[in-house]
Image (tube, rainbow, N blue to C red; front, side, top):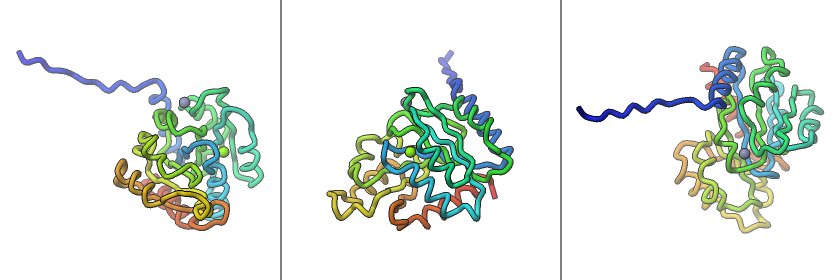
Length: 220
Ligand code: MG
Ligand code: ZN
């Protein structure tokens, strides 16, 4: 008898809860976007720009993930958009149970899109499903153009890559073509959008991506 190996995919406990989160979001018609980046890349700034660009077209909600503090959530709350702060208490990534508890406190029936700011870290956030439909990686010019080479996993998983702080390019030895090439070697499909949350340059193209992602996420 030939030996037959049966390989069964067993969902981790985290992935099971992530699937429940996703079902809950789908049922409410909410498309969740997981925003990952290193600390200081501009995740919160991108969320604030997204709110400013789209608040008349989409009903937005936000989950702010941080190891500690609520400063980012306070900045988002000032816009009037529903926001929940998750403090991970030291954990360097969000996980599905944390997001599940945050969903309990958000008005899901009144939202079209949920922006989830993950903890600032380019390594493990991509290893924990949350219930999101889309994954965004933000990489900023001051971090250097070599980040996709150093952290290939997260760039491989990305549905879209945002280059932030392009206004600083004249002052730094940052080669955008090298960055783009490195992303493309890992990820054939993800659009690469260069922008500045400071000046607003390029934000319109990002907003267009979000609108399309919400429509596609709902199967419209
Ligand atoms: Mg932040
Ligand atoms: Zn972690």
